[in-house]
Length: 384
Image (cartoon, rainbow, N blue to C red; front, side, top):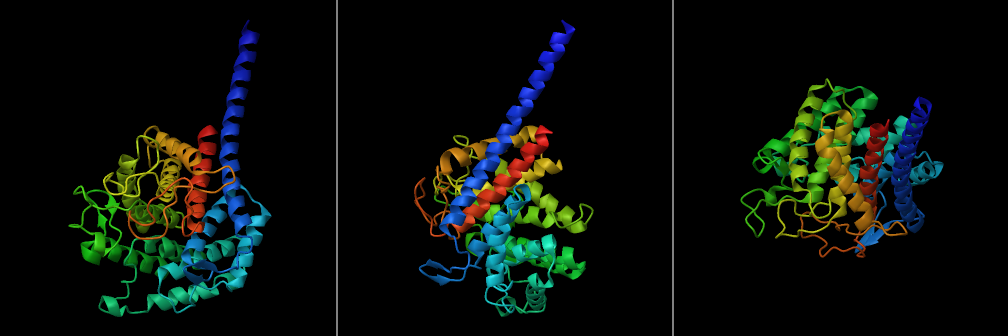
């Protein structure tokens, strides 16, 4: 009898492990599907985008896609991903969009992937222009902000587009000046611009000076844009990944991360697990939206793995988010629905739908990959 019980127990354990492996494999299979759709549709990564006007493929929307692709490569090391990335980066000569004299965070975003490729395989040509650009910005006075050195990030998207790049530069060079400058820039946006874009009392960010209270949604609530808050949330994670947990900057960013996590969790849609474009208002563009959801999943899944967020409280939110992303947004061919187009507030690109093609598909794919990969890593960690 004891032998039979032992045999049954072993079989149950094996069956459970097999089921868990199937779940993680399904996550990775979905990530491949979504990415394969994008790489097939945009087969030549050097081709400029043509939405209203021609733009080089090193613009921020495409740069965010490559952040997601690098995340996918970490769990699915397919050489196609590296070939695709390097073809794109080589074409743009590993240089920020609009050259080394730009001070625009959107132009700098592509540098994050250049830096990551350097950390993977070396090659000074991958980062020399990025470092030159950061050195330029660190000494550039901004005439629009009383000639301040730190007044360039006037919209919260910029925190994701550029702040992790500074932390990468600190990581690869060992020069503290890059982390110092990034934090001065961050704190200026957080605390000084328009009285501070981060509402610490509510744990959420106003998108820019145009949306700081007393600006409100039609129902009298503060206007918090989902993807904008997602940009900051993701940036905090990406920056902390390049810092020691003992670093004073890490500790400061962690505090903001925890404040945001609590606020973001409270805004998740109960009916399906996604988030609205307008985080706290259903009267102002409430409805399904993928990009903010994916970025929130990215941060929450990371936080659980680090032990910063309680698994019992946040794991169900992650499970619901991923389930909803796949069920409500992923088409059979890998196309993504419910992606809000470019803009700066909940009204942009409306109305959204399952079938609507946004003006740019690339950053939506990048956000999906970032969130999905971190969820995959969480599932692997929890299953082991």
